[in-house]
Image (tube, rainbow, N blue to C red; front, side, top):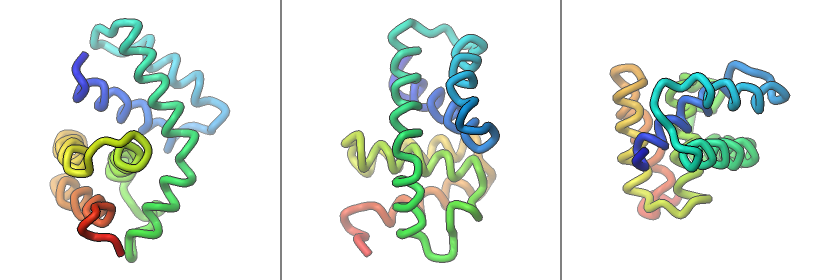
Length: 136
């Protein structure tokens, strides 16, 4: 699987965080990997599992960062698809070292594919607050 496809799979799995208790997320991960229709190598599965686990560990910190940067849009008010995409992108920028522009572009692409009509612009606007040019 290429990097974009892996990111999409991580997004789909991370989306489950909003609908399942923390103690069930390991089982959700297992079910997701068993039932995914795309062919995955064991390396792909390991990457997805590790990435999901890493993001979950930092979720409170990521949400605090998002809430600090957004004005009038706390994580509690955001749509679940948009929030999941933003969480993934913030993780990639702040903890994974992915260049900001790449992370934002990939997030906007996910938003266009899975979100509502306005999702791409919303995700772009929120993530722009995390760039070097917009330190506020």
